[in-house]
Image (cartoon, rainbow over all chains, first blue to last red; front, side, top):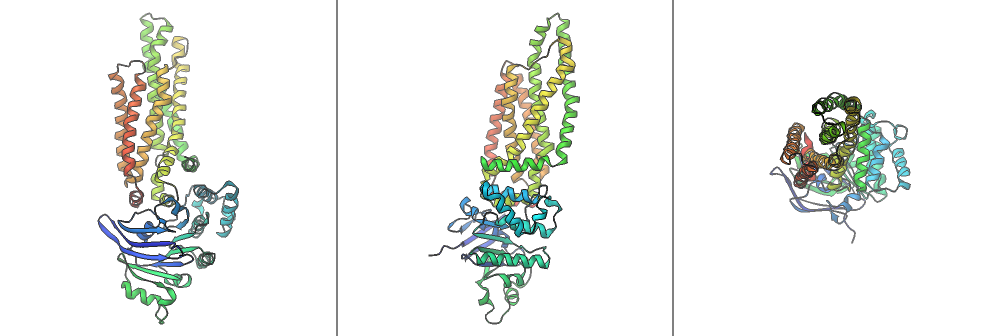
Length: 241
Length: 255
């Protein structure tokens, strides 16, 4: 039996006494590009924090590759780009990657080569020695993506990865995601951009008011000629919370 | 420990690239010159004058003021460490929370203990190095300029004070820093942290002074009192560490 990359089983989470997630369940298989959609305040970020082991569920289980999401083993196999890129501005792009490569325990033999590869992928080789504070939004986002792939994770969690990127940058990120999926990597992509989700994702889940309203293959949603936009508006009412 | 040192190295690199760090070094050196040398020269120099007027031989005077010089060394080293900590690099972590780089760090395989230890050592190590260097430099400067001309030789701190300065004071400061880091990890408003720390700093100073008075400045009392203060801080750190969770850190990062 193939092990699910992400398995949320009846996960509920309250913050400050307010329920944010209500009995959420879904499974993401290896190689899926899984789009996670929902209005602002629907519970997307909280779900990501549960998957990344930042928030323990009040009830239910969150498993990453068969391990508890909070375990160090699970986090070793996950890469991420959060809403805030989390880069250190006062050190260089290279030093940012070097720091994370040490945290992930890359050997000193492979570290330099891997950092150079990632900088090349992010088209930042010529700016690697500059402080991150001098980078544009797009460069920062590309560096964050490079950082997330440093340790060759099995699962990549991306929260709005194309936000702030110019059209060329958006296309490159989408292509990177598709390339990763081709190599058998699993991508969990939280996005507001329905067009981006349609272009890149094989599966989607739609969350609203802390509940999963839809979980399906993208081609199934669109099989009756109904657009993703139409389904989104129908299920969420189209508004932010 | 190896992973904690990865955090330490990166944080030190960041600290050394901040202009504010060097400004605080200059400020501390000015404070050292004005307050440290003046206090040592004024108070201890005055005491030496009194003893010499009473007809004591210079060697007896030196023996009599050694514990005073030692106690001053202990208090100065602690104060210099606290100064660097509070006004120097202690706020790096608060900045990391604001910029959300700490949230990314929490998503890595590092454990909370490793992050807590790494962040604490990143504050502790430079502050101890600078605090001790400046305190010893102050005593050496006061000796050279003020005390040695009076008694004809340098007045060294007594053995108990040296043990307290090099052992017990860094221990007090380590637990002070781990408490500071724990509070910074879970408290949202930095003003509250500053208020708590100002109170803590006052409490440590009072505890040391009252402790020493209680022992009547007996030999080695400074070591025992300092170790007792360190033990209380260690217990408080253990209690605070239990409150530090990833969820609390992330939620308190919202500002």
